[in-house]
Amino acid sequence: MLDPVYKHESSYIGGGCPPIETEHGWLLIYHGVEKTSRGNVYSACAALLDLDNPLKEITRLPFALFSPEYEWEVKGEVNNVVFPTGTALFGNTLFIYYGAADTHIACASLNLSALLTELLTSPVRDEK
Image (tube, rainbow, N blue to C red; front, side, top):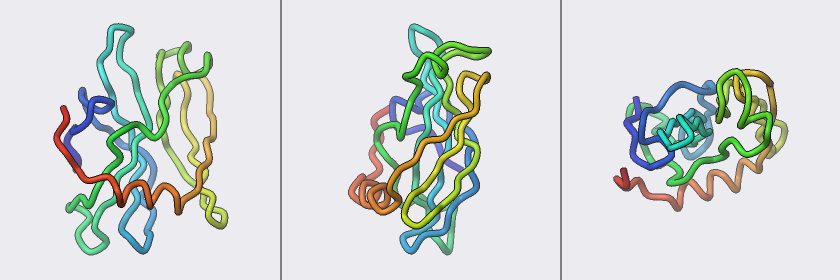
């Protein structure tokens, strides 16, 4: 559905969490891969898709939502991996469950309203 646009997803884009319906569109948390001197780096990414036609991208973050930084995300079965797979929404807090270096399971949380605001102020630009 999405083609790589930004550096953190320049090698390819892959699946992630089931889309979340919001008043602004479908929130998609997915993974992007960038080839670097230390190998592939898998990051969590976010995009907003049209509610009526999810093939239409409204916007996406021009930076990774989060990337491997902790030792257990950087070193493991597959190094440099945060791979989002599921979410849970409690009030305005979005919990994102992810695989870390193909060795651990972890959870990150963020304010859903803040993420949507950030997305809505991030126009899609080709910076590949």
